[in-house]
Image (cartoon, rainbow, N blue to C red; front, side, top):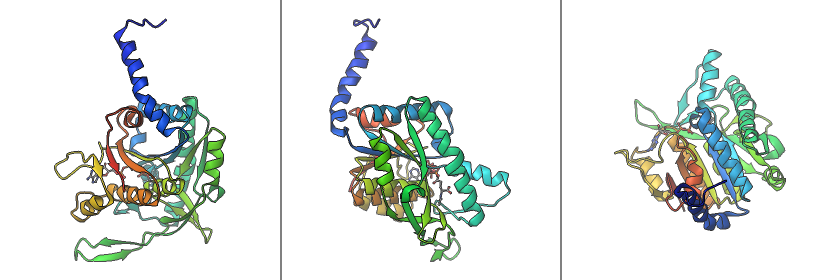
Length: 298
Ligand SMILES: Nc1ncnc2c1ncn2[C@@H]1O[C@H](COP(=O)(O)OP(=O)(O)O)[C@@H](O)[C@H]1O
Ligand SMILES: CC(=O)N[C@@H](CCC(=O)OP(=O)(O)O)C(=O)O
């Protein structure tokens, strides 16, 4: 039996009490959690992540998991001898690459996460943006700076999709059944074509459509860093435009922050870029007075 005079027990009790106002505030609300491919590498962290998500569900919050898998797609493409290139964090996706991305994301990774959540005592349902008409996408229209001429040009990313319509019926049904939706970032176009959607973009579109209390983007850095490597704790959409213009944010951080801006402007209360390498990062951010990572609010 627990010894009530043990200081460690008291600390545990105090932590629970500290969480109480946050539990009240978020009961019945939705948290969209983007779980990046880099953050998935470590089995121990994956276990902690699964526990956090199941705990959120157990305290009456509706967690919705959207996952990535960029490094895992890279590994599969390499194994199959298919060349791959990213432009501003987005993978140039021809037909063959789209098929491989769908196989890796909707197959292996999606079911692995469902398994981790089951192992933590949760009931998860693995789907992709194709299921139940969840995400309709259209071909992404992007420009990029030519490295030689420095001129901004239209680039053809192939079957990279931009969400155009979100129907949350399937998410609502899964959450209402007390289960956890786990969503692979693959969508279908009005033309029936399969589109590879950046997982951050997908998570932001879903968080905006759901009017989520939080969008968490778990990644492999402390949060958004300035040029000197210091953590930027609070950002607005205007700050982000400045950071992009002056080259502070590059690569995968570009779609990540664009998605945060989109989500908060579409009705998500706040987005947080969090370090998925830290055990229980999400719980610490949500349920203690000291937040972690970078908070983005409109
Ligand atoms: N200003 C910045 N602050 C933090 N990370 C940045 C910044 N600019 C670029 N990055 C890069 O963004 C990466 C995170 O994006 P990404 O590789 O797509 O991660 P994930 O697979 O977790 O979605 C970081 O590892 C870092 O290399
Ligand atoms: C269009 C595009 O770039 N799609 C991504 C989808 C996976 C993803 O976003 O995974 P992470 O979150 O782990 O980076 C890709 O093909 O890598």
